[in-house]
Length: 258
Ligand code: C2E
Ligand code: MG
Ligand code: MG
Image (cartoon, rainbow, N blue to C red; front, side, top):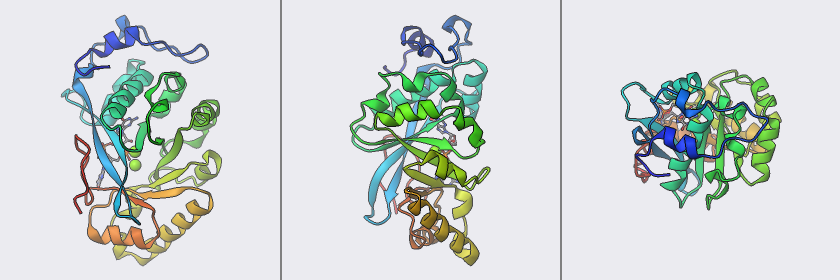
């Protein structure tokens, strides 16, 4: 796929999802709001806190269209137009093509699991040369993912890993970690912000990290904005860190600024 090509042209040619999944709308029915030319990704480093070097990048979608201020608005429009799964596929194409030399963390919208695009054999997540982690947000009920266990099983059998995103932001359902057995858990900024000022928060952080470790998951502390927050998550034993203090999301993939 090349930049500047129209999303609808691409969708017309793309192989449709397999039978058994909800069908994506035919392009002629979709309002022409999601053009590939207006979509791009930025990358934020996920830093290995023990080795002090970049382990991976998280790709975050951006739209140049004034209609979409931030990724959630873009995905809401895609859901309204019934092209959520196809939009996710486009983002994965863009994300993998501009960052071939590192592991990648890619956000997946919960609705994408209903449309079948994720299990298309030609999806770029299956041919990336480094590990790929699909981020599933903890801020939707776990019951949603119970319905997608077969999709998750299929993706993982092909070597793609799972990361639970935003732990601590939503339902804080620790059963997520037991049920989904993610390789990585990402702690929401809500657990990290100002943690250096709060000893009880530090106890919580330390024990969440320990819990994740014992359940077989490595931990990313997200939203690190200051040196103090970095030191506190390091002391809690977090494996990786991510946040404006280390680097803001940009294109091309940035180095570490701290
Ligand atoms: P997320 O996956 O938890 O991504 C982290 C968000 O926090 C990003 O916002 C990032 O720019 C921001 N962030 C990073 N470091 C810091 C920091 O130190 N402090 C603060 N306050 N914020 C920081 P962004 O890019 O606006 O994305 C918002 C959410 O939209 C994401 O949260 C994710 O849930 C969703 N999203 C973004 N890109 C995609 C995508 O390609 N696909 C899907 N399905 N969702 C996406
Ligand atoms: Mg994320
Ligand atoms: Mg997050």
